[in-house]
Picture 1 (cartoon, rainbow, N blue to C red):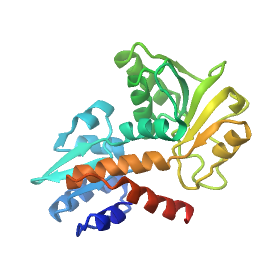
Picture 2: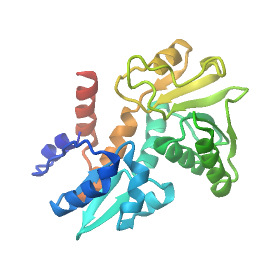
Picture 3: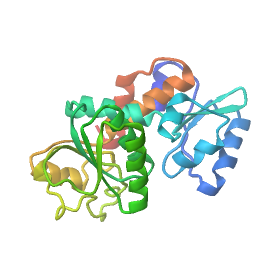
Picture 4: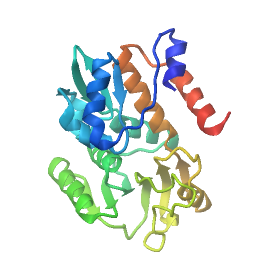
Length: 257
């Protein structure tokens, strides 16, 4: 997506992927800075760790408490978060969903889940049901929502009645033999209008397949990936991201067409 965008705008830039152990994250950031990189993207599990490693935080990273994009500016590492806006843009575009007043079941309270929960509360969803394997994590996120967004009703656990949207913010579904992130004994997909899975590869996870069979509107995480990437592109280059070029590159890479 980024290399296609650089080529489309005639920029002599390259986007490269590196696997970095969490214990080496600080050294990797310093190394990139020393080598005059324009910036970095960070993914799981680095987004929360990086917050403490920045020289400065943009308002977006401060607000959502996670860094997924870094810009190097005169030897300073500035942290941004482009995930939060990307998820609501994708939900509106791909599912045509009005978030204000919606009832949402969110699976996962790690970096992506926490950011999504806080962003959804800021968009005035009426009710938010949070489910996570580690209960202490999910209770901490619920506490943050109660503190910062008191108008959103928040509960830990599965809802008893129907919801407008189920979101998977866990990594369950990335591997073919993964179990579904949703315990259908506790909540049936027939009680949901729409399902959004942040996973985009495979394009159809077990959760998406089950949701389609239950008659839900569905979307995977490609739109979120696109919009967080486009915003990062603009932060680094100062130029408007060529969205269509980036979308086509993603679709070709993920769907093969």
